[in-house]
Length: 133
Image 1 (cartoon, rainbow, N blue to C red):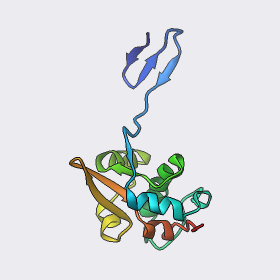
Image 2: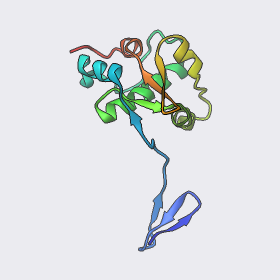
Image 3: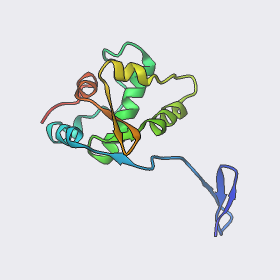
């Protein structure tokens, strides 16, 4: 059995095992599933793009948001608090602004069983140069 030591574990062989926070759940709905079928997942960016988002922080955040969908090979929504924590952990100097993304139609808010879930929108995919099939 492993023993917890601050942010790392020591396994039964005395080796370090570091613990990282991830997403407890991701979500899909009719809109995100429809987008998944319309786009070519292979055209997701491999690095942050200079697009029309206006600030480097937003470009990096947009890339990180889309990386989650790329990992799952479908457009997925993430709980707002988990997404905020994930983006804040990327680099402390970068400020994620959920208001900017929502106000500009780049993320869509949906309540799922009382939980605020943010989904990437078609507009975000367009601005990040994701191609349709």
